[in-house]
Image 1 (cartoon, rainbow, N blue to C red):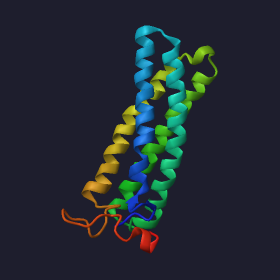
Image 2: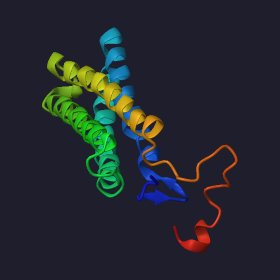
Image 3: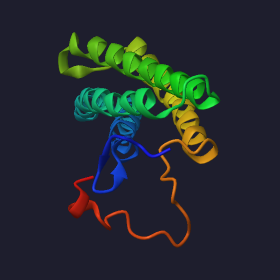
Image 4: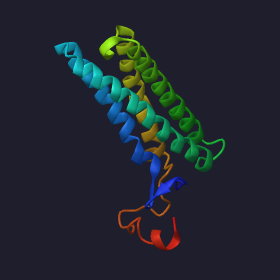
Length: 164
């Protein structure tokens, strides 16, 4: 079931997911560096990575929800897994938004323990959301081109001519 939200012959959602996942996971890494070193530059960087990750997460979620509405068959297991995938990742964004809001109110963006816990829970939930996304693509074939095979032609073939 081929994705409807496409660019240059590929589904957009799997292209975008690397940004919020990378930004939010890296933010947690900078939180750990802050805890180890007490350098405020690490806390400042983590807070800004959280903000960027949440923004990119919203954009990425929009492409995923569009595909869920347009591609996944009603009443299918894929529809149920897709809904769960989206809801889990919405919780991820809420947890990180809470973490960012708690940092916003503090001088030098120093994370409180609740801000750190929200971010760490967010990373754990993102792992579950990612697994569910993998289940959708790798097991259920959602967003996979119907003609996919080891010798399929380039996804760019015919894109310019057809406007896809």
